[in-house]
Length: 381
Image 1 (cartoon, one colour):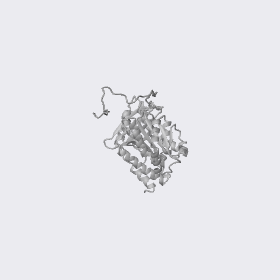
Image 2 (cartoon, one colour; image 1 turned 90 degrees about the vertical axis):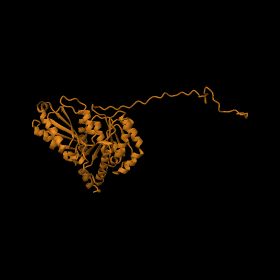
Image 3 (cartoon, one colour; image 1 turned 120 degrees about the horizontal axis):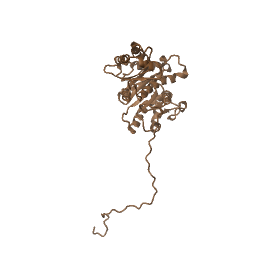
Image 4 (cartoon, helix red, strand yellow; image 1 turned 180 degrees about the horizontal axis):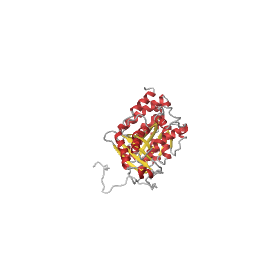
């Protein structure tokens, strides 16, 4: 400009500093080390378990007792958490939900970020899939199941789990537990199947306590829940264990197990073979005993699309039973399942005498008979 003022817009070849900084000690930024939680068992997959409510925490505790260590429990009542023997427990409420799922959902929504952080701390950064364990009849389990599934899915996305499905283990109440409990179970079971249909949940595993009470009649009160939970958790663990083991006969490998786990609604069963030298006895173990020993009621096995069968035998049995006898048993299961089904097979040598057939069947249709039973027992019917 030519008016006597200095033009403030001047361009220099070298930029000038805008501010003179004082010498400030800067902390060294270190990358946070990934937390690692190691199981105490050698299995194919590193599964993580979160229990919700009293029944769900009991289920999670069962897996902890088997040697799984990526385990935690969440409840709305500290009184119930005090009875659970887990290292990681979080109370998100004040005095429980009183069989009211809506109250539990509100408690969860208010503590969602705390639950997410708690799960990440409890599981560490390395795991293959999170399983939500919940009691379907109680307020906390029923009210937090769906939000817990979505929270688990978010955590799996955060740690970059490639197969981002969430497992659900749902304990159904006994018929004698009342109308409100049956109503809760009916509603949450339907919600769980909606998540299966959306491809978010797999597998869905049902622990039917009414069914188990008939399979194990005469159980005293102090042993009932432990027996019910051990029945399912033990079979689940057996498949995770065997799929990590070599077999001198025929291996049930990790891919086989994952195919079943990814097939939606699945069930487990076990059938001892009374006379392993008789081919008919082995086929009968699959056909009749398996149907009788499935741990959930109201299920149509003929809708199953994906199965795993592991036969475990003692030395004497495996040294003498013809392969053709076992093939007949596998073929028997194929005929029970739906057209085009796949049966993954494994034969292992065990440390006990005799022969036992263990099975897991997936891709099953919704158990309409069980849902109808729950509805009838509630005020909804």
